[in-house]
Length: 120
Image 1: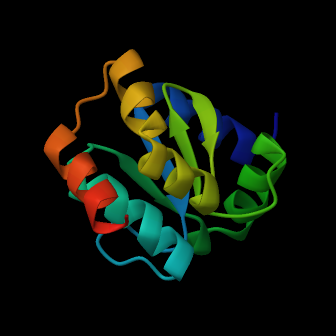
Image 2: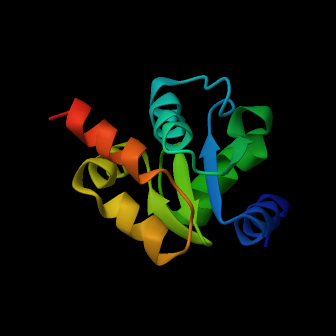
């Protein structure tokens, strides 16, 4: 494994929820990263944020690791879930709630419901 792949594997193993993104959860640097971080923050999910803009090797490495061409990328319990469009769809359908529940990830169910109600 490359250094980036090793770092990625260690990060997703050490944290229940990880978002590889452009920027940080408190200061996203692209709209797609902002949307996913915003959903997770609003739902009060504890997650590790990894700023791929800080390291070019990591930025390419995460794309190679997941075989997914874009960032952000969400991992739950070591498994790749998807990017912005997939996370948005899963949030709206309730699938993200089910995934978090299945994996024992704490989140605010009322906040998740408010997101859906606001986007009907």
